[in-house]
Image (cartoon, rainbow, N blue to C red):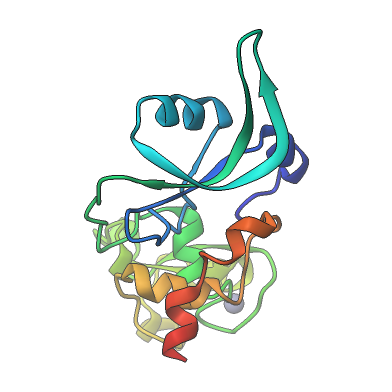
Amino acid sequence: MLMNNTKALVDARPALVLNADYRPLSYFPLSLWSWQDTIKAVFLDRVDIVSEYDQKVHSPSFEMALPSVVSLKRYVKPARYPAFTRFNLFLRDCFVCQYCNSREELTFDHVVPRSRGGRTIWTNVVAACSCCNLRKGAMLDSECGMRLRRQPFRPTNQDLQRAGRAFPPNYLHQSWVDYLYWDSELES
Ligand SMILES: [Zn+2]
């Protein structure tokens, strides 16, 4: 789900970008750089190469294996909260309708409808199947007897990482796996 264009991604040979503490710079979306940007950063001395692909790039004067994992030389303070995106909202709700647990035809529902001033924010939007979405319409859940499984909340990066373990990306290069989901494994 994170990466549908698997083949294009493999062909693109991106590098997983780690912070100076060897954790991914970002999980959602996963911090990836194109090989072109990665090589530029290597030459600017901004990153260390942690792991490499078998593929090499050549020029008349040099040859270099494409980096598959790099780490920043200087630590960047990570954002505490993930971006408010469609994918991240589905991930917070574990790709399940928050009214009936269905996984079919997921859309978004405004808990307080927009027509009544409900805003498009973490705490007012939930994943909902189109059936429940239609049934609820412009009503409040109390008015139509529908109950939320859980009140919507603004997740931290850790919340999404925990949820993300159940929904790993379609494609992870072998050299990336060591650096992913490490925190949440230690917790459980
Ligand atoms: Zn539903």
